[in-house]
Image 1 (cartoon, one colour):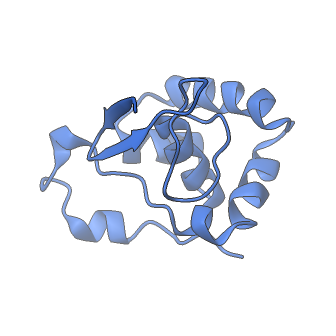
Image 2 (spheres, one colour):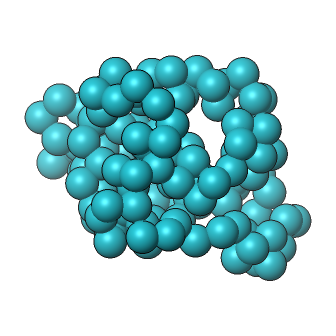
Length: 117
């Protein structure tokens, strides 16, 4: 079985090379796209997502742009509703960036809003 490591996580690859998640059915989304989708569902802006994941705002916009056709959606609102529609996806929490481990502190990550049903 193919395995791939992602910041603090390992998951098997499906036949198409996409990560399979123990945290709900995420379709063809990559681990980072799952992180972005989860934070969209929590109501964060691209700027806030970029800050949380230590990315640029443009990189987050690119992730959103790539996710929309993968999921067959046309808006961020549809991504948020899709994440909120599944208990396992709602419970998913992005991994803290490895290079910030401990420096941000658990309270910053715990402070991220939960996905509403």
